[in-house]
Length: 481
Image (tube, rainbow, N blue to C red; front, side, top):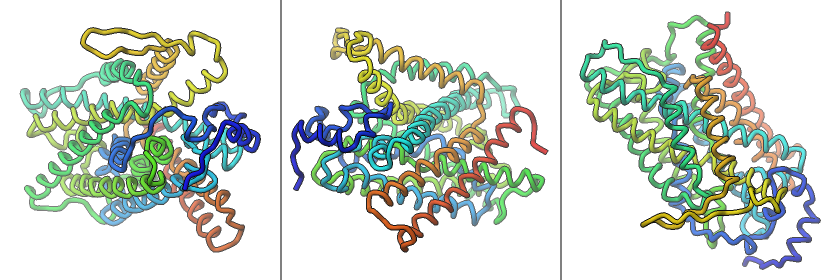
C-alpha cells in the first residue's frame, strides 16, 4: 500500500536530501512527492514500449550490417546479443531507482536520470552525470540530424539512379538536407513535454519497424536470390592490421550506440500509471522492446552482411547496396526520416525539461521565462506559446544542426557517442546506485559480480571510444599511421 504525503513531508525530505537543491538540473518542485505533481500519468506497457523502440531503434540499426562485416559471423551476432543483455540489465537496475527508498512504494519519485543519481549518490557524482547525460541527449540529436540528411539524399539519388543509370553522377550536398531537418525540428520541438508526445512516439515506432523490416527483407531477398551467403568468420580482412583494429573498435561502438537507453528509462517511467508499480511495468516494457529490437537487429545486420560481404556499406539503406525497387528504397528512407523526427524529440525533451525547470526556478519573476501566450488558430486547438521555450529550443536545434554540418561522419560519430555514453550512463551509475540503494557491502559475492560487470564494460567502452576517435581523425586528416 502506498503512503500518502503532505507538504510538510516534502519539506522534511528537502532537509533530509539537501544535495538535491545544489544541482543545477534539479528544482525544488522536482523532489516533491507524486501527489504534488499535477501531470496525470496514463502510460502503459505499450506506450512505454513505443517510447523505448522510438529511442532505441534509430540510426544505429542502419550501421549494423557494416558492424557485423568488421567483426565477422561469430563475433558480430554475439556482440549484438551481448549488448541486448547488457541493456536489459541496465534498464532493470535503473527502473528500481524511480521510487526511493523502496523501488515499488517509496514516497520519492526520481523523474529523471540525473535526479536519481543526485538523490542516491550525492551532488559530486550528479554533476558529472548531468554533464554526460546532456552530452548524450545532445549527441543523439546531432547523430539524428546527420542520418536524416543521408536519408533525404538517398531518396534523391535513388530516383536519379533509376532514371539515369547506376553510373550517373547523382551526388548532392547533404548540408542542405541537414538544414531542412533542423528547421523542421524547430517547430516539432515546441511540443511542451514528454507527456504530450505519445502519439509521435507511436508513429515513430511504426516507422522504425517499417524501415527495419524493409532492410531485413531486401537483405534476405538478395542473399537468397544470389544463392550464396557472403562474408566470413573473421570479417573484412583487406585492411592493414592496425586499421582493422580501429574498424573493429568502431563497429563495437556503433553497436553500443544502437542499444542502451538508460538515460531515458526514468523519464519514460514517469509517464506510467500506477498501480501496478511503475518499475514492474517498465521492466516488462523493456524486455518486450529489447527482444523485438534484437530480432530486427540480428535480421538486418545478418542479412545485410550475407548479401554484400566485404562490400557492405556503412549505412545499409543509404550506401546503395540496393538500387531497386527504387520506390521501396525511397519509402524506407522516408520512414527513417519520420522516425528520426520522433526519435530526436525522445532524446531532446528530457534536456528541454531540465533546462527549463532550472530557468523557472532561478528566474521565477521574469516574464520572458514564465509567461505563456495563447495563440488562437481557426479550426485548431488553442496554441500555448512561451518565448523562453521558443528561443531556447530554437538555439538548441540550430547549434546541433551546425555541429552536424561540420562533422558529417556517420559511422564514426555513432561510434563515439555509443562509447562515450555506454559505460558511464548504462553501466557505472546504475551499478553504483544499486550498490548504494541496497547497502551491498564490499567484497561480498554480489559486490564482486557488479564491480566485475562494470569494469568489463569499461574496458569495452574504452576500446570502442579510442577507435571511433581515430575514425574521425582519419576522416578529417587521413589515417593515423
